[in-house]
Length: 434
Image (cartoon, rainbow, N blue to C red; front, top):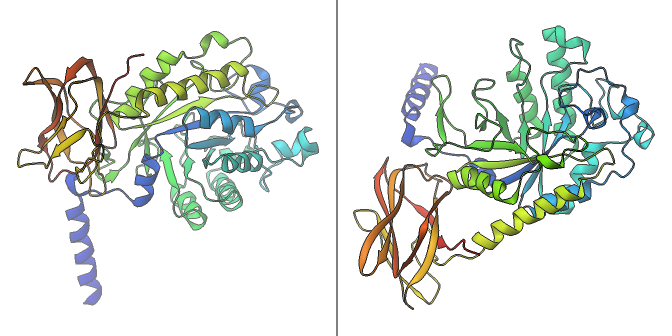
């Protein structure tokens, strides 16, 4: 009788949770969303073979970077504004950049460090030294391992490698599952995730919704670095509502995740990177830039410079706002006054020292209790009259609205429709003009 009552209660709780407005993020997801920018590092035999997709037949002897310097990678990532680095520990070719008890196909059979090296460990140490968080990518698809054809045998193989990665490299901020090329292969994800959670209870799991419906992060759906303008954190994954913020990945060099010689012309410009930033972070998604060390084991100098330029441009534009307001709508700058939100959910701030010119606004929702805003307007007080300068649907973690420059004596955020009570974490305006 007690058991039946417990099941009834559990059923009631699950049913009540199937309400879009009631789904909440975990503390780990909120912390992950605050990172905003990360990098994904591809490095392996493909680096020496001028290709993107390895078939698992490359001779391990080819892997021998003479100037391997992950500290340089981490410094460049940090300069770009990245807060975490995800290392591809095994790509689809099955070549392991860490010593594995499951296979010798990897660094253990290479001349690098006389077969005693561990790329993942050295990268992890460099990343933490530079104050970044660390994550790993372990491809489920394996084009080298013979056991891949045997579902049960490969499930044990992969789960053991999950254990190796999850137990050796400290706290992982993200564990990346890439489903590319593995269509039709049935994986025992329940066992994989159980194994991972044993050692990494707080890691955020990335996967395409079609590959894994109950992960923590979802793929945005393209490799162009573009998130939907209307971006909800809650998704319906096979009739199961989950908080799954979007991660948008795109390589620093167009269509090249691995390094290729003579491909400098593919390096994205600062202007393109800023456009991507606005279409990802500016739409409440996470931005992950793919960076690729060359066959020396170094990021090319032009790539390092471009990452620095991108980070500097983000800081130039968004380093210091013209307003200050937080969840309590209290302003600390002495040139501003503020009014408390009224029944129309209108946050208004007036400039005390006269008109100010700005061409963009950055708004963040407080997401602890879920995402609520579904329609809003931004208004500026121009020549004594309120003028709508931007409007949109969702805000979520962060929304950047860019509009023709206005010179105004005040600015107002008006929430026109929401799923429930709304909390604004921050609201500010900026001038991007050089």
